[in-house]
Length: 376
Image (cartoon, rainbow, N blue to C red; front, side, top):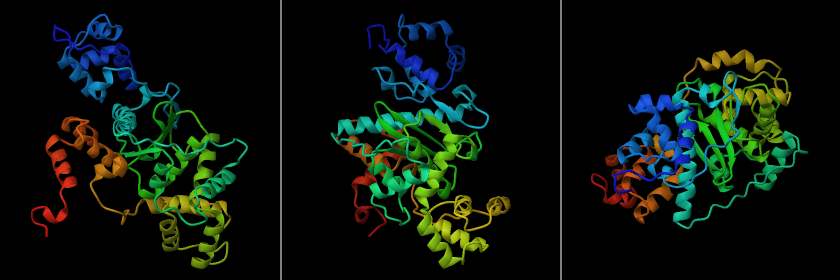
């Protein structure tokens, strides 16, 4: 900070943060009650904001204040939109843009935590040769990962072990089926996946595998709805189906549970198969059709009925923010805080909690259960 109470920022960082949200200078000026020419001067570097102005900008842009104090990468320049009606970031509702920025901030934060704690982040995922079709690539990946033909019980953990940063954040103000995930291979942070947390666990699992296919193919940074009928999405869908539901295993399971190919399964049978492979009813139905185990059109005829039913998830319970951020990120952040690498305010920002809640989390993480009041 200089003698006039101004903060020396990197002008380009102000511009990057604004553009990441698709905001025009006049929109920022109106939101903060400042003069648009003053904002332009900050972005040109001919003037500097006060500390209060910087805090207001950070809050509006959904960034840490340190984002503006040193050169950092912007969102991927060529962000592809494989959505039905939206083609650029300005088309997305503001709350959706904020989630994408939070996703990028979390990827950056995790990389910086690893550096501060000297915990390297090996990237083991191998970009694929385009000569493989989707089924072949899925089979190749399962062999490389030593999965055999068994169902994948913890896909998120598996992808994290390959060096992929995975965050599950609810995306509001847009139909959940219209934005299933985001993926990019960042020059600084490596491969990253955002999954829409508003979808059910089975659909989230399919989205993870779908975005994994984009990373394997080194596709450009992508915001997508996996139902969109375009070649890149069809290819990623075929990979996800084969990766999560390998044909030989699914065929055997179907015959054992339902009967010979062509037998029309009860919804309970489909539910058992979907649960066994940790996918949605729709994904299971379409995969069975693809393998010619059930008649074509069966899934479409049942989707409307399935969507009317309540969804019960009997998986692991826990605070939602923990499941959104993932075990690795939470552990790194708590270790960095305990080692004096960050303030409690910044830790609270990462967790999306207030300071009091964050201090409670810190206390619980360092206190054995038997020493907590009311527990023996």
